[in-house]
Image 1 (cartoon, helix red, strand yellow):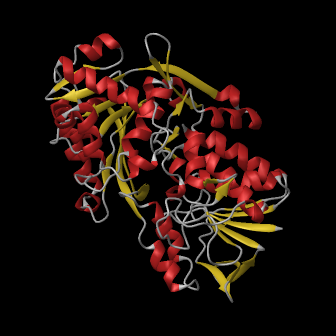
Image 2: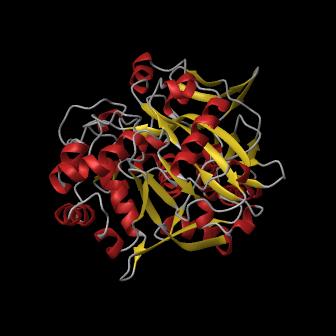
Length: 470
């Protein structure tokens, strides 16, 4: 059996690694000069390699840590206690323990109690299906109260969803509350975050070495122009004028990119795929000669600030591992068609720096060693209310063609923990065709034949995913 994998991001490489473990001949095709996708790196002017986007490994990411052990790179993991804060009405408030929480000025005693109850309540929710039909605002107001929602939740949601979150289910907040709570340990609920020395490229390169050691091939600068379909069956991939034949093809891509590569598929299936949308991101990397905030994450509740938060990764990454630099990421998430994506890098730089000067009066542009604006149109899949019937399945209507995409990782969050776990799931789908089957929506609602409800011991794929993640 030989399998062609289109896409050399962390999902595609993980999939290739798990398949090669089963004796499959794997070939990965990646359009860019390096592997990694969203997890790849950039080279600064002094030659130092740093993450293009911000990434974090939580102490509770047991699957990823086990994978690092398996690959012999666990000694490259580093963890450090972190701090989180809020920027609210021109002031910075630390929110890292019960005392600081109780002193948080925007909320009264009742509001604080209800906010804490919301976090606690989320930990006991197991039937997430009840939440996917509940608007996130309705759920948060019911638990936390209207004042807490207006002061805290609304601005955070507006920032995340580029102003529009009306169709967002409560599963969005629930999944985040559960994940973040999972890493807080001890009486003081201290939070730890971590990284691999060298970033996720350390993980990706370790898996790539294993793939190649088992006879697999990795093709860089090889953009696939078409997944070749003949008589309803995938037979290979076309790169330039050459068709590479395979017994199976897997697209490890965002859904819109996959859709463009299958002109020979059933038009009804391609129309179905066209319903999947993504948040994009504009994420400047600010390289400084000194720390900026001391917080891993500074959440911003001020609508006037365009970026979602201030993510200072060198609060948990020792600067010695990144050339002595201090790294700050300033993400702005965008809906499809957002005018922010049309602004030039220079416009973004000036707007962002002006807001930093307003937020931090002590900030000086002379501290800036580098400022890189990075963009992507397809970063995080958008899931609306009661929309699991729109999640595409791993098995496609085309024989021997599979789709592995982050849109299938629901309701869990999209991160390295869930992505590598999902890759193992997809590998098993390919190796054991009888292991799963497709059924209609488990709640009895008529579903598309293309949805992602593969069975696992009587559970749907989404049920299993939620159980593994939470």
